Image (cartoon, rainbow, N blue to C red; front, side, top):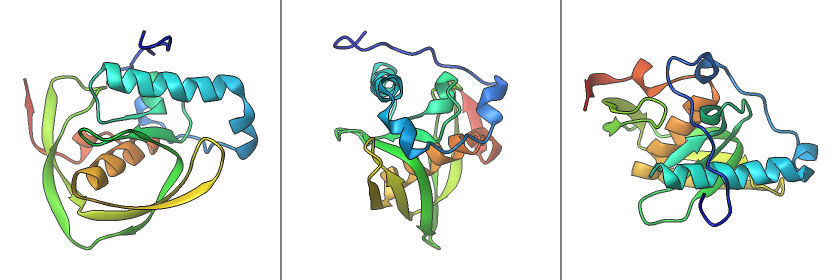
Length: 159
């Protein structure tokens, strides 16, 4: 446990829950103390695993919510994130996944994205992200759609 929070159990490929498109979170659900506590536990799980992102389905909760961060930056909770604009410029970059330990590969992603999402209070936000943060966001939104990076990767290798 980190500071009194619970570390959730990660699920791993080939668990079928990783291949399901998740349900949107309703604004009324955000008043639920258990859901709000879940978000705290999910963030703690990401930090404990030394991840830069984690999506709710990676711990068996099939809702459209994820945390993203970049090295040295605080994490951002994205509820019902939607990519509104993707750049035409794409770049290959190495990715891994907490649910597929020891496996890495190169994935082609948009260099920049504009997203819309809710925070834990249900307030709407829009965010522009580029480079590494854009990659993390796209990876986590793929999780919410039941898509794993390995289905898009080239030069996959195991360590």
